[in-house]
Image 1 (cartoon, rainbow, N blue to C red):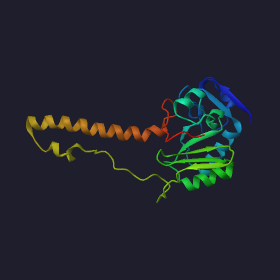
Image 2 (cartoon, rainbow, N blue to C red; image 1 turned 60 degrees about the vertical axis):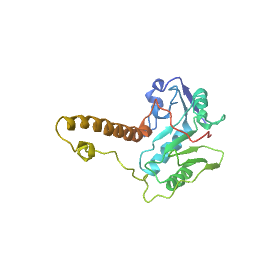
Image 3 (cartoon, rainbow, N blue to C red; image 1 turned 45 degrees about the vertical axis):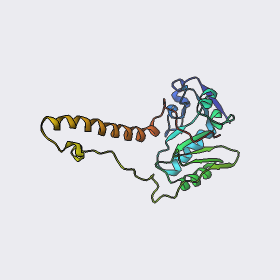
Image 4 (cartoon, rainbow, N blue to C red; image 1 turned 90 degrees about the horizontal axis):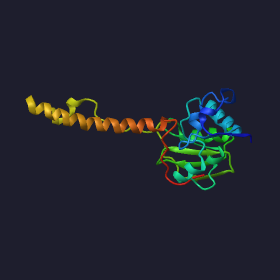
Amino acid sequence: MPTTTYAHFRDVPESAWRWPSFSPAEIACRGTGAIKINTEAMDKLQSLRNRLGKPLIVRSGYRSPSHNRAVGGAPASKHMQGTAFDIAMSNHDPAAFVEAARAVGFLGFGTYPRSGFMHIDLGPARSWGEPFPVRATPFVPETQPAREVLADSRTLKGGGAAGISTVGAAGVEVAQEVLAETQSAILPLMPYGNPPLFSGAHP
């Protein structure tokens, strides 16, 4: 399996990257920016993307040995070989995802429903983890949103000077809720700089 390593994903020549649905930054180590490109693994990942017909959010691709230790990865993790990917299940039905991944040649499967992703690699053939709960749709269940209208807060019912002071308190409360909700929504989409949350060591 041809493999090429670069000290940083920005060093990858444009002519060496042939997978249109992904960027080097998405596959690179989240801790160091280094990247190991395994062409067979990347070809299968692109085939999986084509087969499913919708984006694959890569939570973890290549990991340097130091970053693998930092996130609690298995000592012989396939991520260090560039042959494993952790894919968010926020926009995929897990059962359909596994079926498609097997069809394009992935052999190793680890399921992490509490962290919302699935590990896939080139093998050997094996599987581990808890099953994902059955979904009514291919997407994750909708959660209760933060309040969007300050007038809905009972702290805004007063008037005059007192009313103005309570608006400030309510505004901080709502802003905190919106910030927390926004952070949880965009974390899986961050291609570089933030390591994903793991429920334990995995290959």
